[in-house]
Length: 190
Ligand SMILES: [Zn+2]
Image (tube, rainbow, N blue to C red; front, side):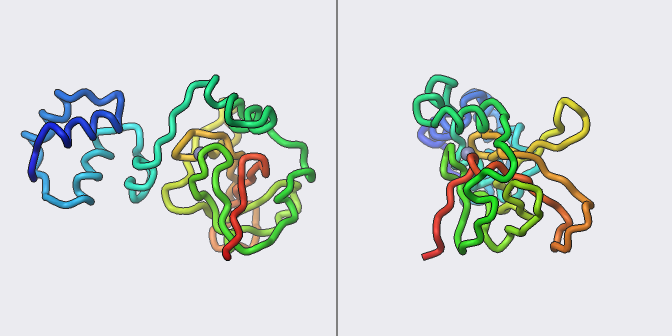
């Protein structure tokens, strides 16, 4: 592993809460192999907060952090209410509720790919439903009510909706990601 100041600077700038001294300590106590994947694994471990996602490269590389004011500037009022304030669109009204084109759904806040259209199914619940997200793209957090599990964009923290399991839908995972259309942006396959 070639350790130099440029690399340390790159790492500290990509992980603001990690100090340069932490990194230098890490470099002297860890046997790093000179390849990109182990470098990013170390970044992921050092980052700490990213436990739980697979293939940490994507999410770490795409971290999007904006202030509330910056989000307000780039999102519509409805997008801000749902993505940043954990709102919910009225059932049956979302543009992707009954939409089954082939393509990819990205985060409406940061454009990180979240779901493939092949994982979308008709749940009849009034919101777009997916049986799985793209690997590492979705974070899960217990709701304060203790009942539901919130799902968020792993890159920007934007609120997507909730995930439910064991409802008996005939899908490969028996999970339903119940997602607000407002939180998504569809990109056609072609
Ligand atoms: Zn996002």
